[in-house]
Image (cartoon, rainbow, N blue to C red):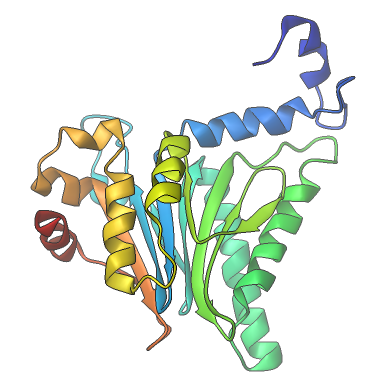
Amino acid sequence: MFPTQSMGYDRAITVFSPEGRLYQVEYATEAVRHGPLAVGVKAADGVVLAGEKRSPHALADLDTLKKLLLIDDHVGCAIAGLHADARKLIDQARIQSQINRLSYDEPISIQSLVVNICDTKQLHTQYGGARPFGVSLLVAGVDDNGPQLYTTDPSGSFWGWKAAAIGKESDVVRDFFSENYKENLKLDAALNLALKGLLRSEDLASLDAKEKSKTIEIGQISTTDKLFRILPQDEVETILAAL
């Protein structure tokens, strides 16, 4: 992917290659592609996120690892890439959400929140002495415009999606979503589609329902209550057993 003759252009984030590429940004994108898989599906009445937790060591406690995190009552996110980088961005997003509530007495719109995150990511692609954030986020929530699902990448770009995947094997899952997504899905159907996409991961294929429930995190938000909820493990196990 990175020819030897071009390697001299990856020593600083501020140096473009002759082809107009920033190799440090591409390296950060590679960190995302090697991260555990996360998926999101937007329904007519809500949004579903699901993600795979990967243990760094056989003795690590999976309960201490978080794939999905709450940003505000009406918005949550899934992580693919470097979790340390994600923590910084999510902390900033939480602060921005509270600033919006204090300033305007209303929840922040999902797109405004995503733009704020991506502004920070973009700044780290143009100044010396910094490196790009090696993480992508799937941001899901409900605001005045209805259910919203966005991805952010290390370059600072963002896109809105009907169904999306980030991390390892995300290309395979996106193809699956392209073939199986239908307009005006209900939340339950979106949950089934998201899990079927997530379970296409080779790392999850050989696990039984009990092991999968420890490895998979599911979050969802409905237009009815507009509260993002990360499901407890026993509820995840029940859902997976019924698939």
